[in-house]
Length: 158
Length: 173
Image 1: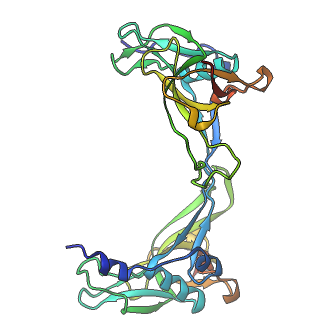
Image 2: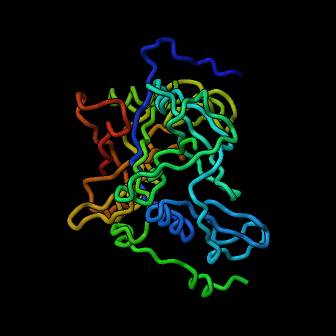
């Protein structure tokens, strides 16, 4: 037996709206703290190197996920230069409205590492972006950096 | 074996002051969680009737239950439900709680009334068909299971078609 009862009048259609109040404070953890502290103070990225597995994790981890070796004394500065691993172009905002100007987001693999950062690309047009392109992080001035991912303004082509 | 002491030694203790002062870095955010939820046929009518000062349910002629809030489908008999039927705004407390904490886990302030939500089986509804609402006009710790209660409605012009069109239930016997 099917449910046959339906609204016959469009004015009977109703919906409930609400807003869930949610506020949070997220701390980065032991490795994340070092990563963002380094970004804030030095303006570079930090990785964690496992000599045994020859892997450089970015962002850094406190353990190697392959061999479980502790990596807390194996943090390495990996600079700010990388290559575009993959990218996408955003034409719309979260609410579906058109963006004035398209925004490019990319996964940037940092040179000499096995990890990377997902961030914006800047000073480049969508048609000029290519996978494998060399890019460099552009950071906010040191006094404006707060130790969050938006301390990086974007990555720009070298 | 898990060594609790060893784990505690490696743990990092963080205080709120460490975060506020910037000693420990953090992200602080307030995501926008606005939503719109389609009431559907059954709950749409339920809310519309609350605005009229009435509580409506839906009968299942197979198990003879009156489902409140109404649903188009009986989950016990696995079939569509049948007639719409009004139930009373009086009922019986099936269970309740005296809550010393607010919804955000903060303590109820001194002098404020503890929250007393209850599960209320409405007269005319099927057994165990109950709604969750607040009890008031009674000392929280005087509430007992089995007490008879009646809805205290908002003034008609204040009603918006929401469960809060009933302000609370008060004990009547």
